[in-house]
Image 1 (cartoon, rainbow, N blue to C red):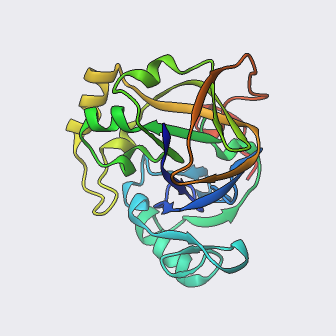
Image 2 (cartoon, rainbow, N blue to C red):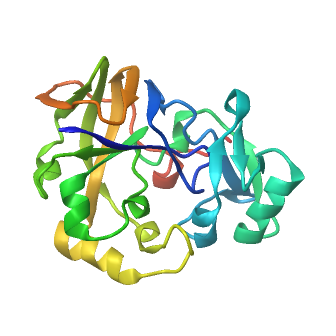
Length: 230
């Protein structure tokens, strides 16, 4: 097996950036989801503001997230977000673990993605592992992925939401993708994971699967009920 794809999401619910290499820290991919969108009522995500998913976000100089071609804390970036999420939407930075829905990494496998037959970007993984049979990932919870010096713990399969039905380029909804996840995979696809041991991960790196008894220190973020403090 090998690392086939690698992504960071500098702004939660905005488009991801494909990488060739990235440091894995105790907080997942360095620079992942360090900015998010909120209103007066709390976080806003692609679950209810589908057009957010189409806004480009990349990591600019000195690690600063850029939104639609502008630094995240500029009026131009704010305007792009308000156009997609409403007039009271704003961008804020937050480094706490609650910014991750479940755990700090999401891992996809190429066999499952092929069986689904949809753009992998709909699943919003951090890593895509290649050379994996279609249903193998369902047996991976309780294992770890060893990639060079990095070790990634696998906790559980991910219960998928309506975000998977949104085209990442156009924002158009195709509920058939969401239905296929429910019918073919029981509604669970990709793997909620975390970093046991930090290290650098590169596209093309070999991946070793092994058993582990290590468990994450915490599970769950704002989306599953953690208090909002951003």
